[in-house]
Image 1 (cartoon, rainbow, N blue to C red):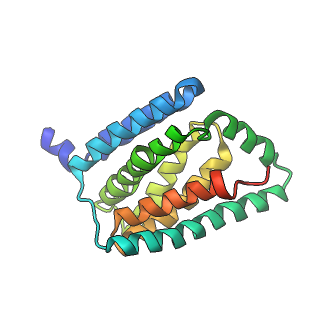
Image 2 (cartoon, rainbow, N blue to C red; image 1 turned 60 degrees about the horizontal axis):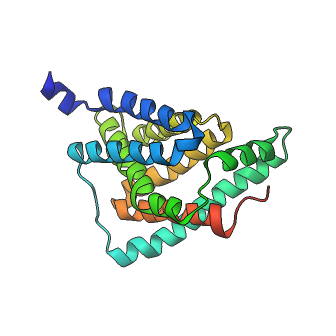
Length: 204
């Protein structure tokens, strides 16, 4: 039985992930504590089951990450502009989400940089995506892991975030399969976060 779970860790890890995400999102007052706790657990366990790829030189991870992170931000910003042209009250939804969950202090950004973003990438791209490749083709594994990531974010009640999470997951997942570099996708993710919350926030 133990060997079975070692070979198929997603049977346990995915329910655990959704449980921890739900705990984090259900109480906004302690969101940053619980989400950090969730990522620490998921990241720590994921490292046991998967090999972390790092096949790029450090300077390439930083340079490419800056470019790809800007592109990722562009997709998110373009999607927001498209939703503004629909009857959906996207502005109100974004404002509500940001008031509850947006980083507002230096330590929030430090948590994002050193725990949350690395944890998300190690778990969703490193573990989930790689283990799904045992059952389906690589393209389907990228799509499936992205959709699962979006569903996890749906526990926040922020439905536009589901679409953003899936799009981001697809880009990051494809980038990981292409470049085989976890530092690259972590830098890409961080650049997108910095642009989205600090440098070029959405015009709400």
